[in-house]
Image (cartoon, rainbow, N blue to C red):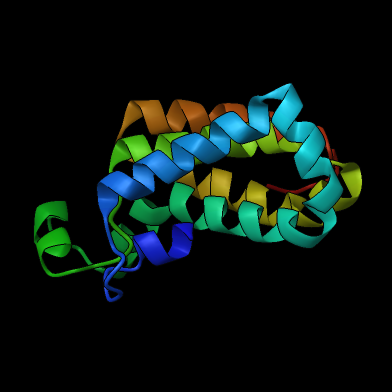
Length: 148
């Protein structure tokens, strides 16, 4: 659902709904009662949730690397990689909460999350860089040999 809200070519593209969906996902991952329900389905859906959050957390960095135009121009042109700083920060915070998922669901995603968090360290917004640093620090504990 988050990917559909982020893709500007679909009729479901809505940045406010996307921010709400990510906030809901982050709160769902951090709530103990909801986490119990998610544990039952984490092996099936945990990877998809983490992949979507990685893509949304690094959306600004991918857009800047592809084109050297102003963010407002890219957003007006329909560039799907431009997300607000709130969306990027919340996605990274949701990745922090995702560490509490079962190890079998989290461990295979560790390199993708480390790569995304490292890319988000170059974000122009300080809040996003701080969230990326916290995310990277927590996920690095899962794989101390990781080169990221």
